[in-house]
Image (cartoon, rainbow, N blue to C red):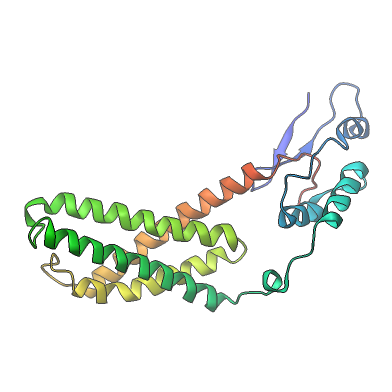
Length: 220
């Protein structure tokens, strides 16, 4: 019976020989059957760091050949983005999107509901939380997808920065009857950390689906 283990990304990384078959014969029967053409250059480079070239020489040869055939990254792609630059960029994006949504919501309140949401306050708050949550999720998923190595620190930095901005936004909200800056800051921070955590899970799941479950890669 063959059993498999998995690393934290969900890839199958180990196999055990079954009934009279050696691990080398099992490895040889599977070596060379992976199509690397569908992977990006970054995924190929990651696979190269994981593959066991001694046990799977054909896969290794095919992987190196495919990686060599890809054009090198441009200088713009190779340029490393600092952590502070990432935090600033994504904080600005998230704040601008939320401000834009707030402006549109103000226009709806003015021209459709004649200046007040008081009669549908519960629905207004629910829609606002859902839309802002969706905006934040999209921003954090983009961050996780394009900067997954720096994502934990960058996402935490964005969450803190957005939270520091939130009391100023809450001060101008006409539906906030009692303004409590500390409560607004803590609530916004926890909300953003939760959304960032969900974005990290979604991004990790997407990478595990996009990259083949390769039981010919060695454990990192």
